[in-house]
Image (cartoon, rainbow, N blue to C red):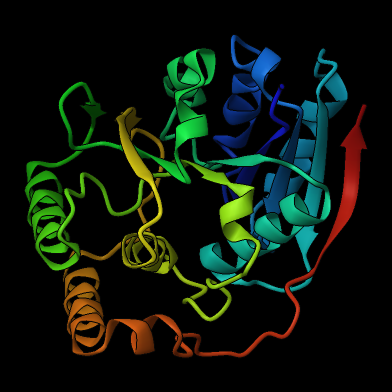
Length: 265
């Protein structure tokens, strides 16, 4: 039986790149996906207008919706909006493809073609494993990522190849209990998801992907990121269950809402 698959594209100030990301949906991936949602996290550039102009000219039969968050929820908060949408609309899987065009959804085609993804609760794109390809990444960031991947692996007792690429796939069934609602609404949301998947013994696959940095801007500051990750791991090791069930958000949001501002098909 064919699985119903949603593509979620988080967007924040991706005016220059978002058109290229939308183009990815019309290629070889098209037969495997049923709908795409682009979630604008209150961008301050002209990204939303760029999406509108692209969709009005796009030749595709794929349903694509542009949603706008009611407020800036952060990257993690946008994930919560998308997960809620996937659950409420009865999707089986959700693919996360960042709107800054660093990753390519075609890297997941092999998983979709042979049905490998059906065996796992999540398939995570990995930039730092055999078969991956990096373009424009500094050696310092590469080795920093290797170090933290190793540290996470030691803590969770499972090989971790990447803490947070912008190309991931989740089983919607594994998201229905919303254990992630109290996770940070920041970039650290993905790190907490990995800790949770390991703690709850869900099936996790890392898959090599290509990744590039050309006209994109990274929001991760290495020193701040390193300190935050070390603190996260320290708190997790003290009491794993308590940590994963604790309130990690700086602002409590009872309902993550977004409105549809445009759709095609």
